[in-house]
Image 1 (cartoon, one colour):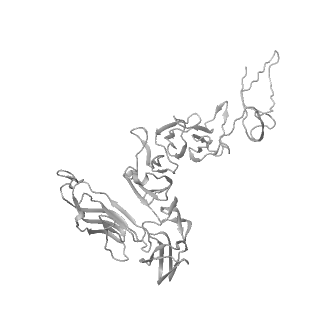
Image 2 (cartoon, rainbow, N blue to C red):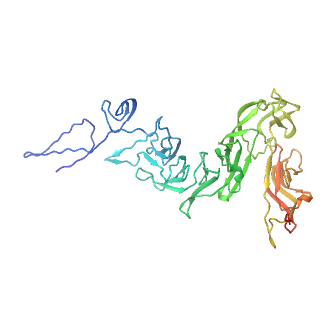
Image 3 (spheres, helix red, strand yellow):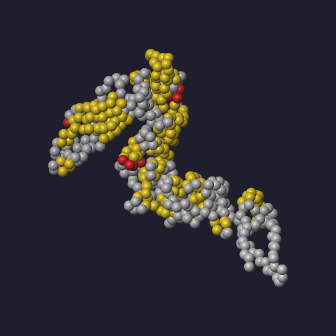
Length: 494
């Protein structure tokens, strides 16, 4: 007996040749069950059971079929909102009708989401459809490719296990944490994913932990709840160099910034407010560092305008560089005595001429600012004030802690790098100016004596530092000299 199997094209002819000279020969032909798949477009619906279609590919025209299914994506069901690449597959997720579904393309064939069978078995490179199912149906918010594919939903966090090559028979979801992510874009920094939590505005990170064999993380806003409570982060951007900062634009047009260096366990927050509203932020790699661009809503000459503003490097050898919002700069070898700033009409602006600050002015309706003398470099922009409050010190003393003890701060020393200007005090209102040489950026330690007054003896050892000049101010360290009174303040009502 002879047995053979194979695949033939439709309409093929078979020819049998036998060396048997006598008797009878039986030839049995059998075929495996087969279904031809194709794609059609519905033209019109005849009735509840019939429709006319245009054949796009895969099947023969004119042959009716009762075996059909609507595609996952169309105008009625919606199209995927998210996309990324993972293990040489194009990955999309979250339609209007299936917000908890993920679709993987065929391996290396990104537009192809079809399935291929050989001998009745689905091939390993076929497309994959993966529903994210839990006790509640949460919407998929983000796909973050890493060693595993991190899936952030509105109620929890998952991973698609990437320890092995994913196939239709080897594609597993594993739930990790139950936090939920906001629509604000997450950032993947080093080997950790930083995202904004669905509720409360909390910013969290997550990464693999060998101790728990799971993804875990921490609340990065634990000590700055006043910055995030009651506000929603709408967009974010990450500048890796020079300082590893994540920028978050809030729904009220203000900006929160997180300095995030996990390998050094450094997490520091700052808050930006401008003469307008921040609407969008993006990071662009330029040369040896990342540059931040903002879209800012401003009111100029009684008209609302959108400005695209680029942040300049914080560290520069050019002393003529200044720090102003929405500024314009003219630098020529030939001296001039005017500058055009039509985008700042009606605004009170700071003016810096050849590295020297001039009196502030209001930009006239013509947009042209006339100077008293000619200069090579002229810069005009909106001023802003930088403030930092250093928390009270803590120290163990003979009879307990320094907290709630009567103390007074007598001197404060600042370590600065290429800085000019600034003031220091117990409060921002009574801060004293630092003394520096004009037109010279200072590097080193400078000290200031705080006056002793009746109200200076209390339980508060905070230090307030303010900088309003349009020049660099790089603060490296703060040292305080504290005199301890020893006792507790009087108890009111006793």
